[in-house]
Image (cartoon, rainbow, N blue to C red):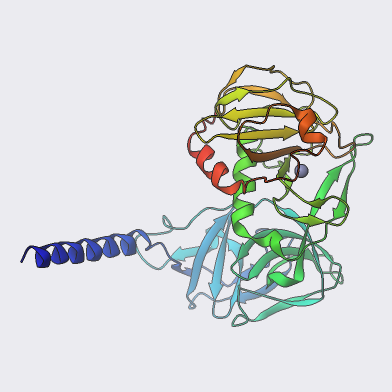
Length: 359
Ligand SMILES: [Zn+2]
């Protein structure tokens, strides 16, 4: 009898949690009508291509808000309309519409491909993008990448979804001398669009720079991910983040101890976290502000500034997680430890993010 009671309680619990989950997930497209015949653009401003128009008697579904535009779905098409041009179909209004703002990541089209209004070929085609076209990567949506590109004939911008396999992410390198940005293509096997690593890199960027610059509309950053393979440098053992500026203050992403005398020709800092028994290695740092045996605190201690020590002309912060307590950067660089066993940083970044104090 007791057994049945337990089974019954379990069933009720499962049902309850399913209901709660379903309830929490009810934020969906919001139905609306145009107040007048409205032009739909391929991005959130009139500098994008105009696509089609929708009349007052039609229903559109608002997916998200970006700037002063709503991103809508209409049949097999999508696009952007000024937020003031829509009237909500129900009394709850537009309060459920999520607000987004995208970080642009440099990318390139490997092979010419059709772009669609949405992340599947069920949507209408919005255009095509040529081989080697430089584009911006906004986000990935399962197997599709949401990109922004310029239509060569009109010089107007468009946004569309293309299959991920056709996109290569590139890394931006800032030239120290004249401060000009140029693109450096890195070989890929498609792993660039692995959302787990991109999410980790975004969190790491926020932590390393303590979210300082991320609220600035002009802020832009890029990263080079763990496990990426480059024909010159081989397997990448950490995650590179940058805001393309020399001298940006770097915060400790973890509470721990500085275990070496920082510096050397690679501008390295080793910070040991005894709760996980791992060492965090930062590279390319300049103006180092900590020394051996200093205690550092996540989100509180400024450890150095962003630079290009050991990577001339390539200003960025390299962060790597290795097991145990690593003490001497000399050992690391002579190759005794270097390629032994860097850990997948995604787990540690996620964990540190939750214990980090943003200012
Ligand atoms: Zn690196």
